[in-house]
Length: 151
Image 1 (cartoon, rainbow, N blue to C red):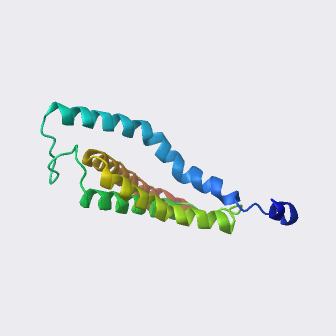
Image 2: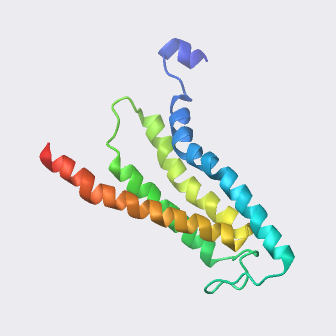
Image 3: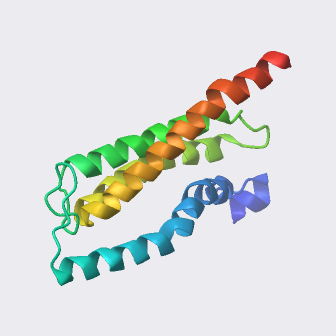
């Protein structure tokens, strides 16, 4: 507080924007993940075989491949999204550092979460992230490049 009063600098100023950018999409998807988790548990206890591709049972965690793929896809989406956003004039160095840190923390935390979650949740997250990455790549490649070429 003394630093803020004396120098006019808030040490936590960049934290709000960084958390909003990375935490809000996760919070929006949380109800869907909870509902999907409940459906998977209901199917797992009712006895049907829930296999898909190499995954023997979608109700059980896939310990390595799906979590790593979901983490890599999330990292790709974060990179594509950050590449499409020009640096803001009001964004200070602290906010940029927070954003860079969250770009690595988000995929790592997803890998840990997907390691323990049912494989169906990790597959849902991977699929949604890959669709988002394809959309962001298309926007970066065709929409933003044309907009930059015309200005």
